[in-house]
Amino acid sequence: MNQVRIVTDSTADIPAELRESLGIELVPLKVHFGMETYRDQIDLETAEFFEKLVASPELPTTSQPSPVEFLETFKRLTDASDDPVVSIHLSSGMSGTYQSAQLAKTMLDEGADVTVIDSKSASYGFGMLVVAAAKAARSGQSKEQIIALVERMRREMKLYFLVDTLEFLQKGGRIGKAAALVGSLLNIKPILSISDAGIVYSVDKVRGQKKAMTRIIELLKHDLSERPIDIAIAYAESIDNAKPLHDLMQEHFTVESARYTRIGAVIGTHTGPGVVAVFACPQQVSG
Image 1 (cartoon, helix red, strand yellow):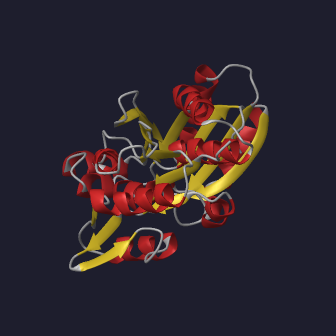
Image 2: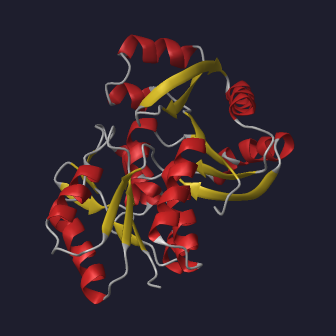
C-alpha cells in the first residue's frame, strides 16, 4: 500500500521540528511589510515577525500562495510516486489559499491522486488535524481513513483565542477606534473563536486576563464531553503568557497530551503579539 503524503500551508502553525519529523510538506503564505515580502515560516520566523509588527506604524498585509506554487508541490509529489496526496488548508472564509490549492489540482495530469480539504479553521486549530493526518499516514492508514479522521476532528475541535489588546483588531478594521479606546481603558479582553463556516467571531468580552482565561475554561466545559482530550496552547511572543492557561486546562480536564506552539504571522497580524489560544479535541490519534 502506498503511503499518503500530507501537504499544508504555513498558517497551520506546526512547530518546524514536528513538521519535518512527520514529513509534512509546507506551502507558505507571504507577509508584506511595505515593499518587503517574506515567505511565512521560511524567510520570516515568528519571533522576528512580531518584532516587526510592533515596530510598524501600519499593519502588514498577507497573501495566499499562487496556484502555480501549489502545482509545483503537487507535481513533485505525484510525479515521484503513485502515493495519494491529502492537502489541508486555512479556512476558505479567511483566505483564498484553499481555492489556490483546488485550482492547482485541476492543472495536474489525469490520474494524479490529490484531495484538497478546507479545514474551516486556522492556526493549530487545523495544524492539529494535519499532524494527526501525518501520523495516520505514517502508520499506514489509507487516504479514505485519513480523510475521515480529519473530518471527524474538524467537527469536534474546539478553540478560543484570547486577545491582549484591541489595538490590532482596530488597525485591521475589525472594530472602531472608539470601541478600541473604551475597551483599552476598561481592560477588556476579547475572546475569539471560529464559526462552523470558518470565520472569526467574538464569543465574549471580559475584564482582565485572569477572568478571561477562567471564562475560556467555562466555555470549554460546556463544549466538551468527559472524554480525554488532546490540547495545544499557542502564544505569540512569550510562553509565559500561555502557561496559566495550560495549567488551568490540566486542572479542569483529563488532558492526554499537550504541546505549546506559536501563533503565526497571518493570525498574529490581526490579534497582535499578546494573543494566547487553546485548541482542544477529544483524543483520537492526534498528538
